[in-house]
Length: 125
Image (cartoon, rainbow, N blue to C red; front, side, top):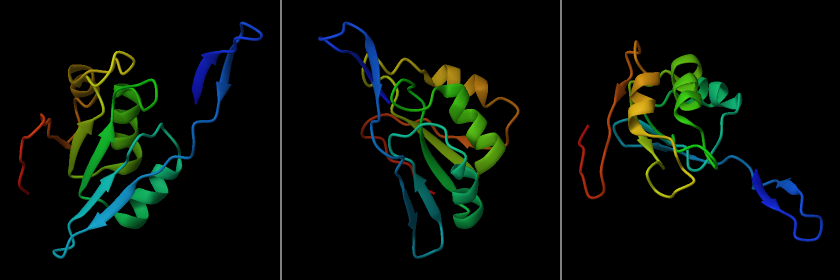
């Protein structure tokens, strides 16, 4: 949802921002990556995980236009349960207030390996 003030009424209005979308990428060695894109929490994450069984999930944690750190952790620990996760879409603009520290705290007690990355960094699996 996008929320802004209607100049004619001076009231805040919510408008649909599009459907949740992401990609499942399967490599030649059967390693599966789920790039969630910009998305919020939705219950079909459980179905997608059960059907595709991703090894690595790239999940947004910034909040506002995407999941907040606690929602992302809930999805990972409750529905998705991958081996590894790379948090993304945080520290990118003033409206994405979710932090890596908040996400790591929300993931405490999980066996899912959190792999924080910075621009230009390369990670091999």
